[in-house]
Image (cartoon, rainbow, N blue to C red; front, side, top):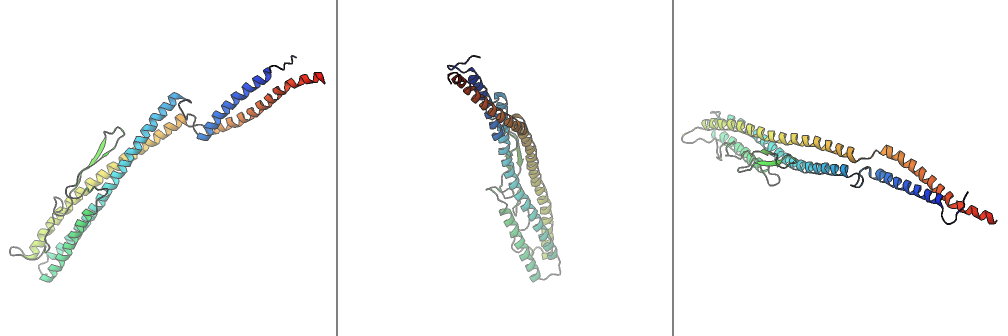
Amino acid sequence: MVNNVSTNPGALIALQTLNRITERLEDVQRRVSTGLEVSSAKDNPALFALAQKQRAELGSIESVQQGLRIGVSTVDVAVAAAESISDVLVEMRAIASQAADPSLDADEVADLGDQYVALREQLERLVDSAEIGGRNLIANGGSALTVVAGIDGTTTITVDAQDLSVGGSNVTVSSSDTPFEATVDDTSAELAQAEIAAIEASIDTVSTATGQLAAGANAFDLQNKILTRVSDALEISIGNLVDADLARESSRLQALQVQQQLAIQTLSIANAAPNTILALFA
């Protein structure tokens, strides 16, 4: 056996082993703490680049879905108002039917007219209340709502505006403050009958407009659900690319910690070996 106090080959080898174990331990600790096997381009350039591309697509989907949710809210408000307008028109028809009774006197006709006008004013309020974010899809002069529906930026969904204002193309009820009072040419019953016809036409056109608005809302909902599925698939794909197997990494961590302790002890023994030469001088 050669005793050398100038160099200690055993200690150098033990130190190299300890350094390798420490490096591996640091990698495993990083994966355990971050939950990622590929957390930077240095870990795996190809997988990191692919994961980054998919993360960009995922971010684009989130932006598109936000726009779709805003679109759904806007159309839902318009649909709710349109349904309420239809309900009010049904009430107005009932009042007009009562006013069509020729046996009513002037006071009774006037009372029914007041109720009718009050409901018509309610129609106007419903149209005004359908505004959200500065947009009203059922007001006179409203513009169509177009929302980006794909991450390419070119796919869109458009919902046309529906004019449900009183006196517009869809709601043609009387604008008179005395809709059923007899005139020179018509009796109260005749005016009421004419109003019934106008109300029935309005109910039909409002129902059609409501259906078109609802179809637009359904299109937004469906596209949002599709994008949610795509988003989930991308998240799974990104996880498959970069996520660490924490159960396996935990086992590696424990094994490397034991190896590190043994390497430290080996290094300590190797460093102590040259001390045996002192025994020659005892």
